[in-house]
Image (cartoon, rainbow, N blue to C red; front, side, top):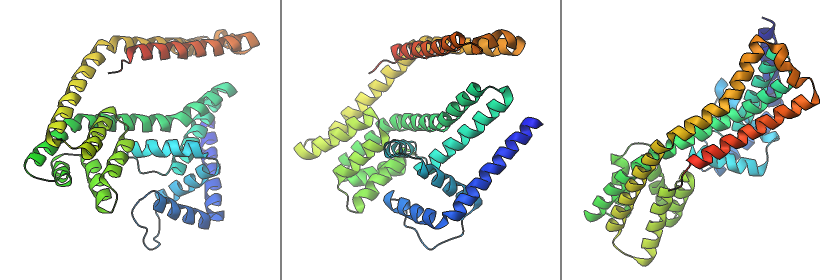
Length: 319
């Protein structure tokens, strides 16, 4: 009950702070949000409308994130959010990361009464939203990659039927499902509003950050400059991508044991430490009550991370 009271008190203070921040800087936040919407090439902003509580919280968190953000970090996270197809401003993402970090760090500190556990919880909580975005991005890239050969075949058949490239891409977007449909429609939209096809394709490559899509875009741009049978080129690229997918699947099967071993070996020391701290906390606390013990713990964690990284890299074979 005491821990629950502490957590509720923390959340109350946090939301009071967010409310006061939004109240004091409401006009600046509105202007900044409008500018972000224009600069991000989003839909045009209409007349001022009442915002929901969810939008209010997101905008307020975004303001907090904007106050402590850095340009390089912002650009990197903006690109990652676009690649993951998550409609959130970078400032909102940073504010959410800080909120999760503060909540998890405080919870672990109140639970264990150890400042270093609370600090570890803060760092872990700050990374949780980034891990979620990274996993979402990887899932979307896998879907795009699996849809690419079929979409290239549709493009090739459309070109042989006498369609232009944009018309064939429109047919492929109609036949395919998301996420490849969304990307093709965006290329068509960008080209229709004045952007050259090469620039639209390069934006597509930058948004996706996939080797197979880079190969597809590069081949298209070269073909547009030097000429050639585009339908045959697309068929060749589709066959190459299918072969790469097959080889990738075989390698993943062969290296599955190494990846599982790396995960289990990395988790075993932490699992044993948790079990010992539950049944005999005085025994494990000897490591944290002396300087040499803390040094040994830090070194053990460091070498554990290095070992897991090396094992995962050995199992990661480039194709």
